[in-house]
Length: 134
Image (spheres, one colour):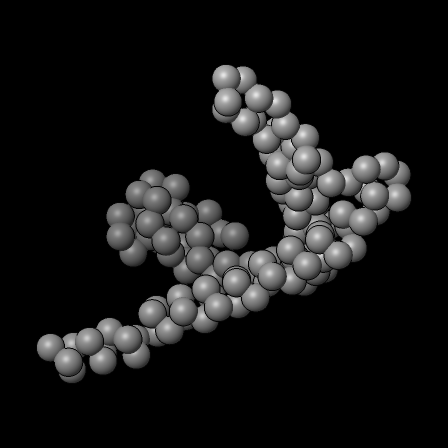
């Protein structure tokens, strides 16, 4: 049983997942710090940026809608930070990398049986249909 557990833990998927969780947590901390320390104070320049004191009471039940507004603003700022600082640059980078012309496939499909055959073939090896030259 110990041997199987060791095999499981050292398998690539478990190690990759563990690394992804650790890096994800660190990345989350960086994005949260960006929003808390840089983007949220920008809202404070324009107006009040801490709504946590806002609330109302109905029959001794306190509804803290100000905390909800703070969380909503933080969510929008985090989503914007991830989009503009991570997603957009990666998409731009991938577009630049993908600008190379597509490599032509060395095979083609037979029009009769739809099997994959060499591009230069004049007869299908599967259904023996005659094919037009490429």
